[in-house]
Image 1: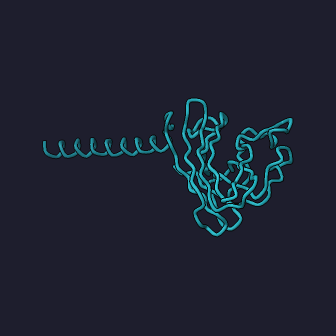
Image 2: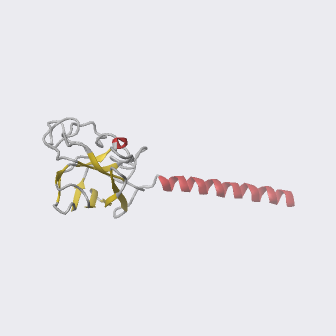
Length: 183
């Protein structure tokens, strides 16, 4: 009777452990509910922190609240890029614009625009900016245009403004700040 009990106990324990592992795997792929917030920290080419972003899942897309500092004044392009990497000094590791629907770049392009395209932003004379952008074409979830696909995504500020039509990236210049969108 003792051996049978020990065998049963071992079998039940194994099932509980395995179901717990499956539960953890399911949670890693779990959708972000409406209202879920994900932070991101911008760095410049030397790796110095230069701002923050907070991405919020809404019922209709993603709201991005951004605060930047210590950047050159003027108009700058702002995009979501296809990989969650921000290797200094040039941030080329972030890849191209986030474009899961394989469209042309720019708000003025006939076949555009990328899911990661946003309007230009203005950095003030003090080197700072505070703004919000919204996209119905993005999601924190694993289903429609997920920012958390297998290689993640990043937010990028460019040195110049986007002309909204040149391919593949609007002739926006070098990448001057980058933020990996965290989980």
